[in-house]
Image 1 (cartoon, rainbow over the protein chains, first blue to last red):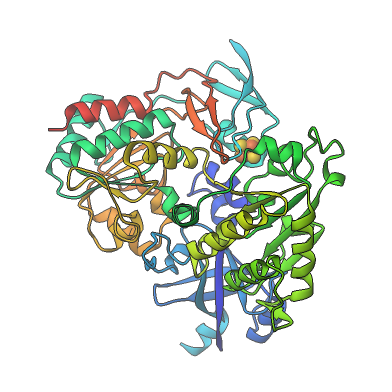
Image 2 (cartoon, rainbow over the protein chains, first blue to last red):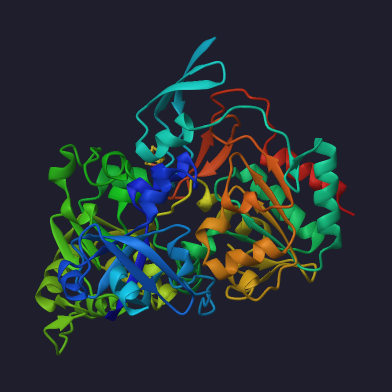
Length: 117
Length: 422
Ligand code: SF4
């Protein structure tokens, strides 16, 4: 089961600290390989806190560690970085700015994908 | 030899905190006082070891690297110069000179942060102020679509939330603070009032605020997830405050409607000046991204996304902005200055930088440098090079050199490239 949710990206304190250590550092990887979700969305999608979620858009897909956060239902947050950028399209609507916030994304638990394949 | 340098400026974010103390032993930085966790890393994780330029991953002499860069740029039909926001304004001027010389497109990281804010300023103006005025006078703060608690860690204590000033001697107690965002954040937890807006509804909420300021009644009870009663309360505070300041971030510029959101907020702030003094400031991210806008504006007339292909500057966001240039495969060579589009652009745009010859100037490793044709290791402004940067409120602040490594600056390398291009 997957659901279409809305993706926003942004800076976090850990992302900034990890960036100074280097984008190949474990700190950066850990800080950018997570998705924060609404707990009810997670329960419905059978994604456990600390479990893996698969996020997919027309651009690509990426597996991230899911954390329950204080997000409104339907919204997922991923720290800015190389991973989430696999999901972001290049359309800028004539402004130069891609949709780093507000793009729709299909979200599923990772185990389910393995079952299905 | 150990040295202690005082009144050091942190070059990391648009706050440009200029009250740091840095202790060093030769070129090793041992201790940094007063920097936040984001700023600490700039100094403490700095690798001062001497490095040589690379061509195709192999170390070469400087003149060979300069010759290679010049030959790439001389052969290119449509080169792109991008980055600039973690460089000094002295180097930003050189980058514009290089763009002029080779007929390049030049764009800064503004296009993926506050580019839409620049478009809004062009459309409706900018009711601005300095951070000193905020600290000394502001009794109402509205943070809209920004989270300084994660992105500008000393903004609250130095300039806004808890800062004490001439008319705000009790700091936090002298201010009413609103946060407007699509989700609760560290910043919203520190506010007196949090208005949670539905994603993509900022424009409607801002328009409703303008309506309420004009004394009109909306015919609905809720707009964009926010009860109108709460918006009325905010408008009352806005009209009756001594000095209100709105801060805005990427919650407005990256969301649907982009520059229209920002223009609506700027217009609201301008209209509020009929009732109270009110200003708005964009929360600028990179240390000198404001300088990039300044320098491009003085020299070309436009803040970002400028093309010199016809021999004079032309402005066209969506066309000459870096993501669009790369996604359309319109650039056939690139100079990346002190930034990492390899990590921060949509993957499909970043991928084009692997197809074309890319020249990178940076003080440390980056994703884009890892597959660049030419890499120039530089000094870092504010660490081992001095220069000028513009704070988010457009105040120029000197960056100090706290250690001496002898590394060349962006400015010096750009000078050599300009001299060498045909
Ligand atoms: S708030 Fe910004 S400028 Fe100030 S110390 Fe932190 S990173 Fe540096």
